[in-house]
Structure formats: structure tokens, C-alpha cells
Image 1 (cartoon, rainbow over the protein chains, first blue to last red):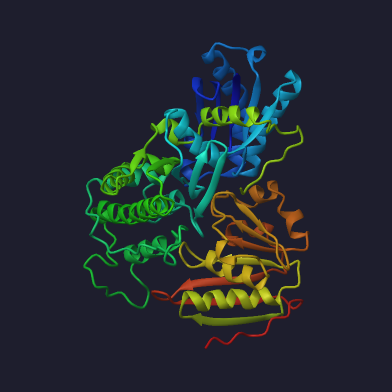
Image 2: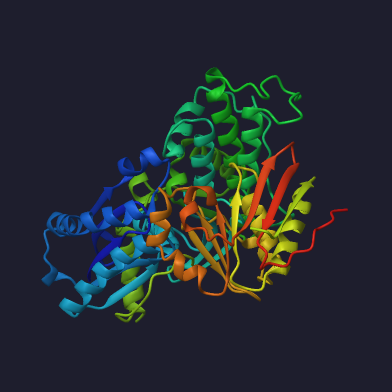
Length: 341
Length: 155
């Protein structure tokens, strides 16, 4: 079964052709990152316009690269939740148009579920159940996957997403956008213990996250606190260019530690010995390193897809949709887009 | 705007939540709340309190709207949590249908409202948050004549 998948939930316009939920025949991604850089984040109006401009060429390229035409397709798939409404609507409208014109079944899948599926796409023999950590600029969730179609979210952020914290801290440190790769790179030359930043675990046993406090803590440590400038460590209130790598490393270490601890805690409490990751933050080198190290001591195997399948892509959408279509879960042509899950 | 103003010092996260809740409990529907304050000042935190006062289920799960721009929560009154952090200006919010949302009868909380001031009605409630210390914040709440709000006393 050949499925054309479309993904447009944020700032990547992506299309892919996947056969039988396994074989990636094409995986095309048109990034808009350059358009959003000067704003320090994705600007919805710009994102929507860029999706409109890119979608047809991206679809053409995905079909051409797979060496197929619309006539060869068995279904069309799209991620219709969660994400930026205006952005989701572009991909959804394109998918509906093709489904309607070609009388093909339409599958509307969850972007988060698709990120988890990216692990199965990358490694078809991935043992189930597994615990998945999906962390990006818009989402931070822990899920348990018992089978391809049986996935439950068991923890989520209660305020900022992990990637959002990277972006906002990069803004405080005036490093540019997107913050994740920049902080990852700078942190390599920094001391992760230079600044004492909080790790927020919420109530004992909680699998939820909170990354708002660390952003505020970075702000204090960087700019100094009004009315209470004297801190216990020498750096406090002394924002200097030389301290940037130290702050980047300290911040990254704190975020990574919480992500790793909660993910492994989830695996432990559900008696699961396999952990998978996804989302843009899953590209972070320190996260991969610490997760792999710590998991080893707990006899847990970590599965890490290549960056192209971690960040937003349409292959994961087309792949997951195979199972939707096989389970009879097709969507009507009036299916809507949703900003939240 | 001849309503009222209260300047109050919050000494903790809990007190900021309490102030938000008090404001939420005073809402009757149709209010626009303009939240102004720098990164990390507690705008989203205040909104969690506001959500509690609006009778929203699990207000602790009111998350940052930075990524999706507008989050919506059903409650005694529907809360629209808007974030203008990444917007270029009022035009962007217009394109997202902010006028319809404001006219919907719910309560609209707009973070970084100073970036989209053209979208904020004259009769909006303004909450300005300044960082005055580690967990201390000075909040200045201003409301229009048509809004009834009793000054809050924090213990």
C-alpha cells in the first residue's frame, strides 16, 4: 500500500511516500527556519504563507523522488493535530483535495503519535511496549506504546515545552534562533556545574514536566536579581560573553537531567525495558548521551532515530497512516485541524 | 478609564496564583486581560490562577501558548489564552480571528499584549508584572469602570 503523507504543523512543509508503513520511498522537507530567524521564533502568519508557497512543490518532489504519480497512491495521510492551526490547515486542505479529486481514503493522524511511530519506521523490530519521549519546541510528552495503535500519553509539560525553554533561554542569552542547536554547540565548551539551576520534578511520582522555572532562574542568574544582587556563586548577575558556554551547559544539563530521569522513571514504573525518543530536542547530543548512559545502568535499551526522523517529517505520518487505514480509521473530508491533542 | 487600579506585591508563586484566581472569580464574560511583563515574570503563572478562578478543570495544566499562539479551555467561562510573543504585530492576531474571540463572551488573556496593542480594546483589564526579587513580583492591576473588582489582600 502506497501512502502519501503530509506534515505542516509548524515551520516545516513536508511530504513523503511510504510503502506498507515501512519502506520510505521519499521524505522531502522544506524548512522555513531562515524566514523565522529574525523574529526569534515561528511567526504564524509567515508560516502559513510559506506553507502555501511550498506545499505543491514539496508534494511534486516527494512523488518524483519516489518515482510514483498520484495514480499509484492508495491513500493520503496528514497530521491534523496538534500544532499551529493555520499551518495545519494548509497540509490538511492539500490532503483533502488530493483525497477528494482521486477518491482516495484520507487518514488524519496525531503529530505526537507519528513522532513515536518514527521509531518503528526506523527500526521495524522495535520491541513493544516501549516508553517514548517526544520533546520539541511545541511539545514535551512521555507516552507508552503497547502496540502501533495503542498509545497513551502518561506525562506532559504543565507550562513550557522543553524546546521552548531552549529558544527562550537562547533569547535571554542573545544567541539567536533556533536555540536548541546553538545551545547544544556552545555547551560543549562550558562547565555544566558553573551555575546552579533548578531541576523541577513536581510532586513525587509525577511524569509531568515544568520548564518555566528554569527559564526564570536563567534570567536571574544572567541579569542579576533586582533588590538582591549578591548571590552565592561568583557568576550571579555577571552576564559576560565568556560565561555564555557555562550558562548554556548548566541550563542544558538541568533540562536533560529532568527529561532523562522522568523518561527512565516512566519505563521503570511500567516495567518497560525499551525507550525511544523523538522531536527536535531528541537531536540534542547531551540528551542522547546521558539517556544512553543512564539507561544502561538500569538495563534499559535506548532507541534513537536519525535526526531526519526525529524532527518534523512526513514519512512518520505516511508510515503511521498505513496502520490507521488498515484499522479502518479513515477520516471524512470535513475533518478539522486541532491546536491541542 | 475611570475604573480602578491596585498595586500589590506578590511574595511567592502561590500569591501570584491567588491574585490570578481573584481576578478570574470577578470575571463575568467578555473580559480582555492584557498581561504585560518580561520573560519569566510570571504571565503564564498568573493565567493558571486566572483559569482556576474561571472554574477551568485542571488549571495546573494550562500550558504556555507560545507555540500554538491561542489555547482554549472550557470552564465556568471559556478562557482563551493568547501569546503575542512571536507575533510581528496586531495584524498577525487579526489574521487569527482575535476579534471573533474577543466578541465570543469568554475571557481572553493576552500575554505580551504590549506587542499587539492595536488589538486590545480600550476597556481591557491590564495586569503589569515587574520582577522585584527572587520570587517577588509587583503586580499592577487596572480595570475599567464596567468591571467590578474588589481589592485583594494577600496574607
